Amino acid sequence: MPQATVHLLRHGEVHNPDGVLYGRLPEFHLSELGREMARMLAEHFRQRVENGARITYLAASPLDRAQETAAPTAEALRLQIHTDARIIEAENYFEGMKVTKAELRRPRHWPRLVNPLRPSWGEPYKQQAARVMEAVQEARLRAIESADGDFGAAGPEAIMVSHQLPIWATRLSAEGKPLWHDPRKRECTLTSITSLVFDDDGSLLRVHYSEPAASLLPGAASTPGA
View 1 (cartoon, rainbow, N blue to C red):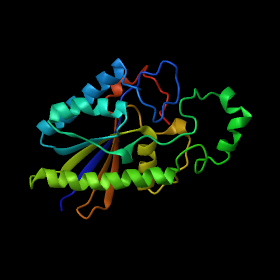
View 2 (tube, helix red, strand yellow; view 1 turned 180 degrees about the horizontal axis):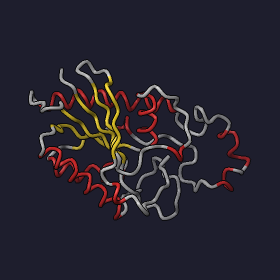
View 3 (spheres, helix red, strand yellow; view 1 turned 180 degrees about the vertical axis):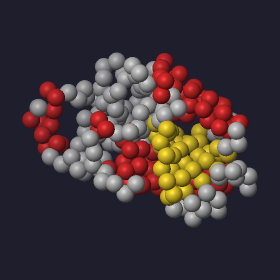
View 4 (cartoon, one colour; view 1 turned 135 degrees about the vertical axis):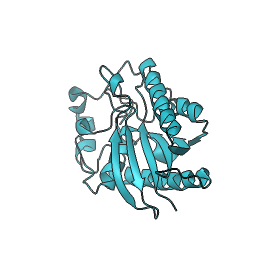
């Protein structure tokens, strides 16, 4: 099998005027800026294909913001969006709340704050990384299969539209780093790309990070989904 790359793409900015932690809640759609980010990423990938890249597979989390981010790329590359629940946002106890210092001081929340290493307020980091990497490996194989023998210079590529925390947990795991972290220090901005490059036997060669929509980030909302 050839070398292959799977790009983990974080969704664009979400319309969230109340600043809540939206997690897996439905009806959280991209803002106008988020839609512009999605279009910019579609153009980024279109240009890469025009220059010889073989992007043959596209998947997205079932959540609205991920599907809406994937849509312009699907149109630009004439790819079907495959919905994959394994790359959905992390479960979080604080979903639907506006997480402030005052809110966290409420005694009813304290049992959820006892273990930041797991973490105790949501889906274990290890579990997130495992489910995403399982989906990534399948996407790698699907990209190779869909290339139909035309692998290009750098091998076939897949795009998976997911969410900040699962992407970051997967990257930390892939790089052999501890999974616990300060959420404020995640290197995974809106519509950033975390690329996992695999050898022909499926072993990870390297991780690459890029921000094709960096020009749109100033002023964008920074509330994470989880």
